[in-house]
Amino acid sequence: MSTLSLSARAGLLKPSPTLAITSKAKAMQAEGIDVVSFGAGEPDFNTPEPICAAAIDAINKGFTKYTPSAGIPELRKAVAEKFERENGLKYSPEQVIVSCGAKHSLYNAMQVLINPGDEVILIAPYWMTYADQVRLAGGVPVIVHTTSESGFVPEADKLREAISDKTKAIVVNSPSNPSGAVLPRETFKAIAALAIRFDLWVIADEIYEHLLYDGEKHLSIGGLGSEVFDRTITINGCSKSYSMTGWRIGYAAAPLAVAKAMSNFQDQVTSNPTSFVQKGAVAALALPPSSIEAMRAEFEARRDLIHGLLTAIPGVKMPKPKGAFYAFPDISAYLGKQLTTDVDLASYLLEEAKVATVPGSVFEGYGHIRLSYATSRADIEKGVARIAEALKRIA
Ligand SMILES: Cc1ncc(COP(=O)(O)O)c(C=O)c1O
Image 1 (tube, rainbow, N blue to C red):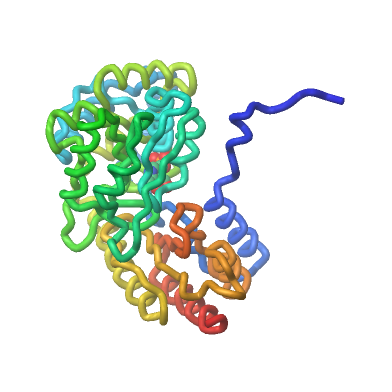
Image 2 (cartoon, protein in one colour; image 1 turned 90 degrees about the vertical axis):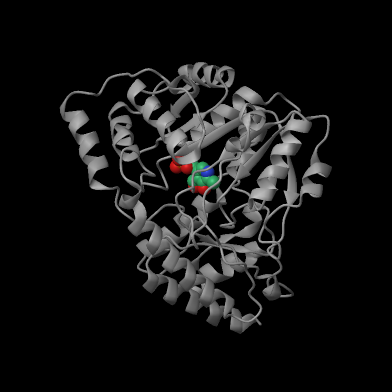
């Protein structure tokens, strides 16, 4: 019998449940079933025209060869300028690494920071990729849970209790996927103080920074002072702000030693992000904030709509999300004898109501479901009405 086998690392990986439910919904749609999908994690807008034009122009001019692995100097400079202009973070272009999506930037960071056995603190509910990337680096995710009553904001005491002598880093994601929470300044300050006191790295995922509502202003934890800046890896990208999910451009900025290690790592794994796509990213970063305002405002209107409709369903509770494009209602009132977990409930909604959502336990947000409102207002109305009707049947 063959002794051929895969690595233990490969065994750590499970298919993404978000993608699984989205593809099941797509398969049902292909069969002609009218499914309303709240699964997608991407804006339903076109990439702004100047970005497309810049990439097409680059192709036409033959800009189709390898570039430096960490990105073209023009883009690294544009990213450094963006961080200073919008986030008050003073990075040199050498501290910026451009990668194939923010997911890739995060992966590079985890690979160069984490040793086997190192613990990394994640604030739940969290984007599940963090935990898998920590495990892929040999690390151990340590989870700090939050509640919808507290707006999914972690308590400083709980964060402190999660720190051990093995803790290496903490991941902060504000605005958050899946909860839409935006951490208040005091929480950022508490996290910064703990990171300094216990000598931790801070990985700040700011991918949703431009999708903020009710006049919220984005805060970058690295901007809270030089001590925290010197231990922060700031992650961002073009996917959500400029509706460029398929283009695959993310970037990280970090202390020089970390940036160099990430660049060396990327050298051996992917080399550069696609050459002409980088030209598109330069054009994206040159756009005035007004160019994405219509998309942000539309998301805010949809946020109001979906929040109003969901909280009108008896027993469904959720704080009003302050950013990103996700609603994360607590549906635990509907769990009991018939359906015991949020996974059962999400399957029930897909089968019986023809509505695709993502079970909260995927994000360690048990008893919740995630609805992406990157879909039309008409679909939001239709989909939530179906959910309300289906929940009534099991109440
Ligand atoms: C919190 C968070 N970070 C990062 C990403 C990855 O974005 P990218 O498309 O740039 O890889 C996502 C995508 O869903 C996300 O939700």
